[in-house]
Length: 501
Image (tube, rainbow, N blue to C red; front, side, top):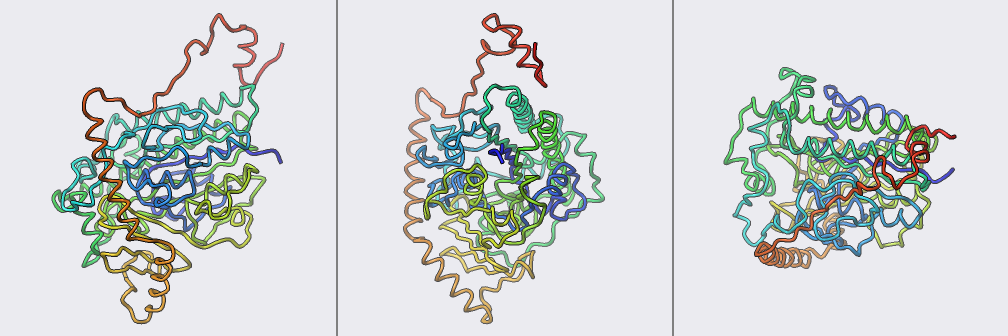
C-alpha cells in the first residue's frame, strides 16, 4: 500500500465514560459511533499527565513530562525534542496543525510545516504554579464558575475558536485534494470542546433533557489528600453549587460532545467527498478526561478514571479490521504508532517512553501498561501512576498510596493499598516506582523550574511585551483569483474534481 494520509482529531477534556462508544446511552455522537464501528476502539487508554500542556507535549513526543520538562501549563516545550510531526516530515509527509496544542514557549510549530490557527491559550509563563506556597490558590485557575454559570449561550470564545478549527481543517482537506503537492499528509485538528466552561448553543442544549441527566455519585468519605487539595485549588468548597447547576453543567457537557461530533462529521464528509477517505487513517482521542462531579471533583488533575482515561479510536479500513482492545495503553504510544503507519524509522530503544500499537491494531498480543506523572496544580510533590492488568497504583511521597482493582471496582471506591492481602502487590509497585523515578530529584527540578519561570515571567511583563503566541499568516496575494496567476490553470486546479481543457 502507498503511505497513508493521517487525520488526527483531538478533543479537549473529553472523558470516555460520557461517550456512546464506551457505553453512555444518552450522548448523541453518531459520527464517533460510526468511526468506532469501522475502527479499533481502545477501552483502557490513558494520558501521560492529566493536564493540557503536559499531556499534549507527551502525546506528540512519546515522552513522559519528566523527560519533556513540560511539568504544567506554563512550562516551556523545548524545540530540540522530536515530535511525531518531525518524524513524519522526515518520512516525506506534509504536516499540518489546526487548533489547540497549548505549546508554551517561542517554538509554536514543533515540526508542523503549517499551522492554520493560533492557540486558544497563552504561550507564556503566566500560569506557573507555586509548590513553595501550596496554601495559595492561583487566581487564574479553575473555579466553580464554570458549573455555577452552566447553560445555554449564543457564542463563546471556545465556539469562535472551534468553528475556526473546523473550517480551516475542512478547507485544508479540500486544498490537499486539489493541490499539485502529492505528498501524504498528517493533519491534526484539535478542538477545545468539551472543556469547560459548560456553555453550549440552544441547538445542542435541546438534544438533552434535565430529567435524563443523572447527578454524580456521592463523594468518598474521607477524601484522599490530593482530592482535598484539588477541592482547594479549584475553590470547590468556597463556591458550593446546587444540584440544578450540576445537572446543567453535565447537560451542557454532553451538548459540547455532540458539537465536537458534528465537527468530526464535517471532516469525515470532506474525506469522502475528496476521495481521500480510502487512504486516510483517522485517529480520535482527547488530551485527558473530566471528572464532571464524580468523587466530589471537577475537571482533571488526578489519576482517577475520570481524569486520566481518554478515548482512543484508530480507523483504517482496508488495513485493520474493527475490534476492541482491552489492554491498557497510553497516549505516549501514538508517536511510534504513527511512525509505523508512515513507514518511518522506528525511534531508538529507550529514546521514548511509548510503544507502537500496531500489534493491537492487527489483533496480535501487545503491551498492557500505561504510565503517568502529575507535576502541576494541586500537587505538592511528584505523583506517579502505573496501570497494568486489573490494577492501578498511584504514588506521591507525601500521601498514602492508592491501589485499585479497576476491573472489579471501576468507580475506584475501595483503596486496597492498606490491605494485608495486597501487601505484596503494593511492595512490588513501590519497588517499580523506585526503579523508574528519582522522585526527590524530580521534585527539586520542578520547584527550581517554577522559580525560574516566575522570575522570567515577572520580568517579561515589564516594558514592551513581546508575545510568543502563534500568528497565523495567509498570503492574500496568492489567494483566490489574482493577476499573477494564469486564470485557466487556476480555475482548472481550484475546481474539485479537477477538470481539464
